[in-house]
Length: 310
Image 1 (tube, helix red, strand yellow):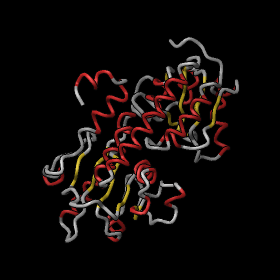
Image 2 (cartoon, one colour):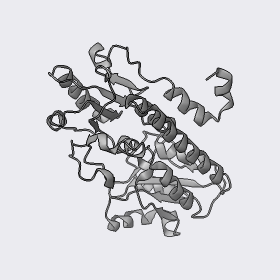
Image 3 (cartoon, helix red, strand yellow):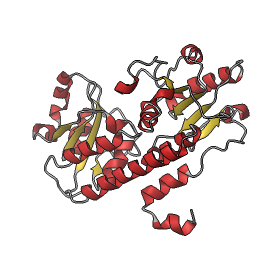
Image 4 (cartoon, helix red, strand yellow):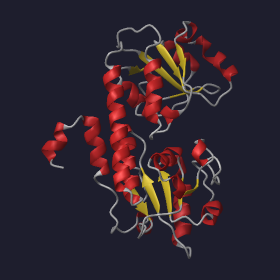
């Protein structure tokens, strides 16, 4: 695609295409062989890329599992994480969590590809897995797919599709997701702007901070995240949340007991009835299911009394 054509696209779409049009080179020396520290700045192969379309895939993130399922490739998945809750993979072996995948279980599944969504806390275990693989009699490649940003999420289907030998299916899913995000953006433009606290944990208050996936979605909707400093997913003092005085609390703590809602009652918006409890954690998984989650977010943004964004 020409530079002029890229500049004519909406920024979000152009960013996703820029990432997806620069997949990891199949002829490149694998990152692990060079001993480089992966930083999640782009897709990368750890180990030699597969010579033929993979048939036995282990996924180390629910969003990548969802991507394969949405592309019609469920039959190629042989193992998933403990966090995967999609009904399509309920019967599959579990290989551990985000930060502690089990090399023994993964090797036992004889994969010809492992898909990993880059996360800092899982870097050392995945590097160790790569080292064991490269030293084994039956090495398998690991494809590192960045999923930190919305542009990453929109690029992932094409990256995964190319790795799976299903480029057309990857492009189709990418186009569908881009269209869903654009629909959300257009519909959200008609809503009044809100200052939002996006909660992902109640028992220990954890929120979406600047640069997080929900933070991007709020900005896309023309709203303001009241958490403007700190890491992407900070533990947040309750008294600070009270002082922030958001118009709306979006509560994505779907896996915590309902009794923990009482902890949020100190926040004025919650006492006013301006708390919207999401029914699923789709918005926390930057993959195909986020499009469904955006519908819930639109409902949430119609809740509460808006005020001018400062």
